[in-house]
Image 1 (spheres, helix red, strand yellow):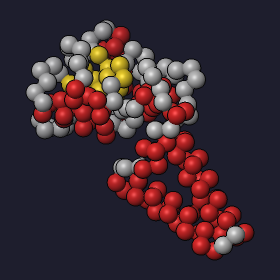
Image 2 (cartoon, one colour; image 1 turned 90 degrees about the horizontal axis):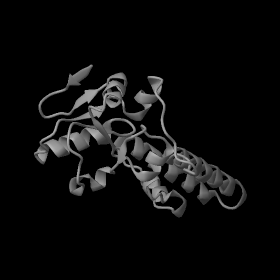
Image 3 (tube, rainbow, N blue to C red; image 1 turned 180 degrees about the horizontal axis):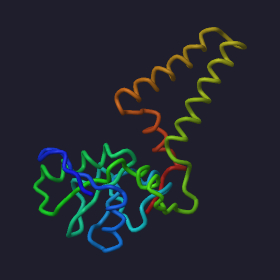
Length: 179
């Protein structure tokens, strides 16, 4: 079932409806996540065109369904394409990739893909907090600031949707994926 939010907002499609459309070859799925996210699990047959590259990309003809992790980037991408006057129907997957998985539909994972970016952020942030606490206890009390800074960064990321640590980790050599 497809729902329409408003003329200015993107319409969305459920995971089951998208699966049917894919089986009938009615749509092309474009995953607007970064390559490292795409490699860790994507809808089989989808194309990876990150949101940052979408404005200059040559898009396939026919109806498009855009996909991301939460639905936030894909919804923005739909609005961007509509504002640019994209002639073909464009929707996004309601709830993003997790809704696809929750519907019991399989994801394709590339061999040798790095850990998902958010797991890398959790590992790095947790390690930095523990390091700050350890250095605070053994070297100098001022090291507690490291834990405070990481905690404040996580709160900022949660509120704003911008995670500097994720951007930094995405640029690391082990996360460079060529698709």
